[in-house]
Length: 116
Length: 117
Image 1 (cartoon, each protein chain N blue to C red):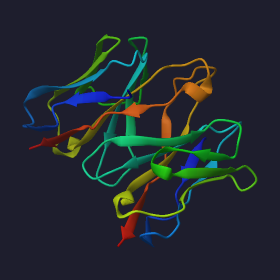
Image 2 (image 1 turned 120 degrees about the vertical axis):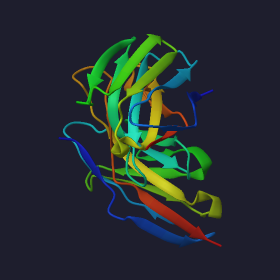
Image 3 (image 1 turned 45 degrees about the horizontal axis):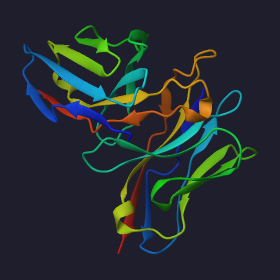
Image 4 (image 1 turned 90 degrees about the vertical axis):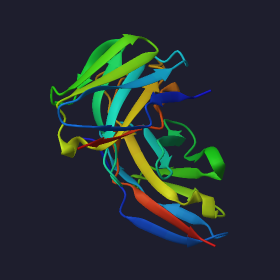
């Protein structure tokens, strides 16, 4: 099973709202990722957590705040977003395998966010 | 810096014909290469990867890819296209942070595959 789940599927929020995106995996993966994707463009990496610690932050604005409560869960807290933040937000996970040939990122279905 | 290029924005093919979606890469060292497919309003699905070994890699849904070191290419192929293969395809290379396997995927710009009946 290579399933990553994300909730909600769709989210509409105003620029003054606070909301959270949730991601979950039960594959025992030790790395989890947040990507942002605009229509018909490649995903852009935002954050990486390894062993529940933030290991990569791709200079993302502070209005996006990631959290990794445990090895199965990843949240993305949103506050004071701008309309240009409207996009598909994808979560992914990977095993962090020692062997490179076993290391693959698996993606969830995404949350489509619209900021009004 | 590591990068991948997908030279075609769109590929059109008739159902039943073979298809090729092109990808070239530029990396230092040995490349870790991936293909993902994205259906409309969906996340990315892993198709196949090349890490080492045989140059012909077989993946999901009948897809395969050929790693060519001399041409720095990793083209995605399928012998007989289906209408249901119509989707957005991304080639990616994994950037490596030192000796760690935690690395960002560097994606190409994507190629839209249209298979017509």
